[in-house]
Image 1 (cartoon, rainbow, N blue to C red):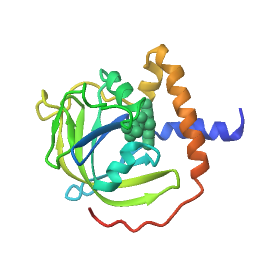
Image 2 (cartoon, helix red, strand yellow):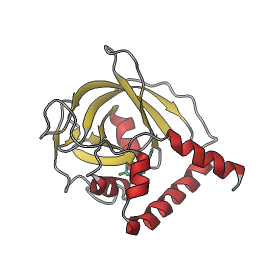
Image 3 (spheres, protein in one colour):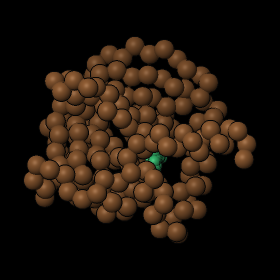
Amino acid sequence: MLQRDRTYQLLRNLTSPVVAITSERSGKENGMISDAAVRASIVPTVPRLSVYVHKFNYSHDMIYATGRFALHLLHTEQFDVVRRLGFFSGRDRDKLAEIPHHRGTLGLPILDECFAHFECSVANVMDTGSSTLFLGDVTAVGTGKAAGLEPQGELLTATYFRSHMPAEWRKEYEAKLEEAQQVAAEMSRNIQPVVWQRR
Ligand SMILES: Cc1cc2nc3c(=O)[nH]c(=O)nc-3n(C[C@H](O)[C@H](O)[C@H](O)COP(=O)(O)O)c2cc1C
């Protein structure tokens, strides 16, 4: 195995749980999947998280323009949500049409079913060339419509998703990943300083 491939495989241990990111702009709703999200504050009075979103994803433009997104931790029975939101672009279809959801306090689509959700207002951004790291102030939380105060089910980790995804999805998943890697490779070295103005 080449050293660069070994590095990439080892870095896969640093991926986050599988999350669904939703956005809304001028009435249009969208959602995508990421496994690059992390808690970004240890201060209970200043709850924050961050997530990397590729610039070529439709969600990127929606979040960048509005300064708002909702991040959902998913549970292990939600593979269908990962496929619907993560394998296709909102440029081509209304991906949330068949996923039950409601509007949250920031006007964002909130999935009725999830492990937990966080509504966020973007506090700052960092350009990576191919993606933007969004730092979000968490302004509201929930644990799914049917749940009580505690999350239900088992958290969907990236490792669990990769090892349990239906065999017939794997080819498509790997082809999409490879395509994204090629586009990202061309953009990655062009990092621009950005001053974020709150929307
Ligand atoms: C398991 C999984 C993890 C993903 N992780 C990321 C990620 O960290 N960042 C990202 O920008 N896209 C990620 N994607 C890809 C987007 O979810 C995908 O490109 C989606 O179609 C974008 O939708 P949009 O164009 O409607 O925004 C991931 C997809 C899957 C299935």
